[in-house]
Image (cartoon, rainbow, N blue to C red):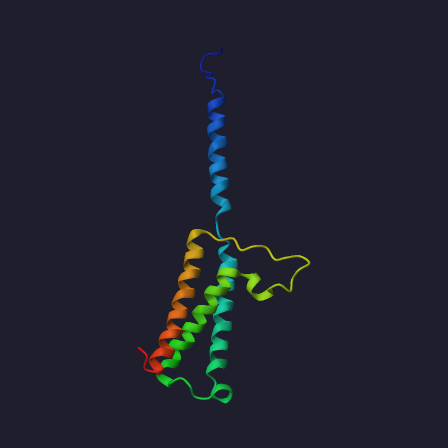
Length: 137
């Protein structure tokens, strides 16, 4: 053997391979944050519009006091934003898109957790606004 030359052996290449497989398994569970953010924002806008539509006195009458309207609108916005970011395109397409189904939503733990928290907080805000209006709480 030449002086100064050390044989690395198969152990180093195995360690590199093991590191790459751990890195690839981590990448598999990453969320697509751009798609998640766009779905969340679009869901929030649609939730706000639907909340206005539900509250409009021309269609449903005055059934919610004015002091509870902001809570109801913010809650409906959060509720639909959480649903949209959790289900993605499946929420908007439904079962009508059968030929080429939409890709499933890639979630990490944190993106799924944030979506579920927004969904729960929106449902609580809507329920609290309606219950306070009728004197239940």
